[in-house]
Image (tube, rainbow, N blue to C red; front, side):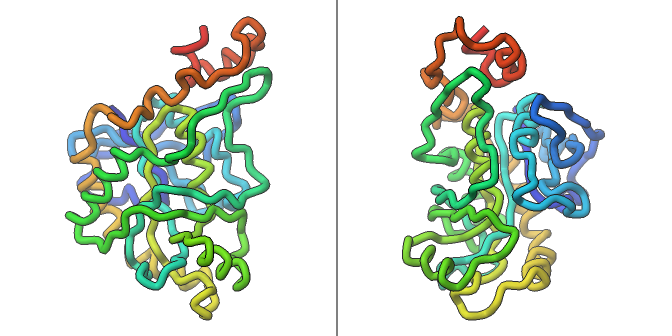
Amino acid sequence: MKIGIIGGSGLYAMKELNIKGSEKVTTPFGDPSDEYTVGELGGREVIFLPRHGKGHRILPSELNFRANIFGMKKLGVSRILSVSAVGSLKEEIEPGHIVFPDQFIDRTFARNSTFFGDGLVAHVSFADPVCADLLSTVSEAAKRAGATVHTGGAYVNMEGPQFSTRAESHMYRAWGASVIGMTNLNEAKLAREAEICYVTIALSTDYDCWHEEDVTAGAVLEVIKANVAMSQSIIKEAVKSIGESCPSGCGSALQNTFMTDPSLIPPETKEKLRPIIGKYIS
């Protein structure tokens, strides 16, 4: 089993990680955000990807989510831990707390979040968008690491790169959402299509603007820097606990989802998606 970790490049600057090298992966969807760092942590093989590229060069709307997840699939990853900064929409979720959302609300409009098309139609179930088994395992690991943890809740995925207006922020609170961010929904959708277990480790950095304070990138960065060590501790603890099998069924998410007559699927589409659909469509 290989465990993928998506987040800031600082996540893999931990002394316990034995870095074995890096992998530059090509995909039919273009280039991933950066090279994948391959290493060993706690006796498990781990593969890190800096979501926004080293040095944080790529806007959320510019991220090639398909290439990032497809690259993980090509490298044999079966679990993804996705670490990201979020704004809190609830008073009890304070800056510095860790949230494990189990739902998403999609407010994006400029992204491609499916591998399908080009002559192949498939519809995966997304009612429960994160792996329940992985969520339970990693949230318990976060508690053991000493984090203040909130398990469950809805993550509003906005387009960005601007932060919310006050009207939007109050609307999302009225919906009952817990946190707001710009990246994780699209990863979760593609991970489900790739039959990879996925969980979000959301670091609350601010109260969005509903709390009346304006959100600034500088303030967000200060909280992130202060909590890199906690994020590393959670990953180290979680990697030791993840089981070899997934009882949630993520590994067979594509079963019975294909609508297109296999004889009508273009050969080039079959070849392009072979790492994802190969066990179902030859």
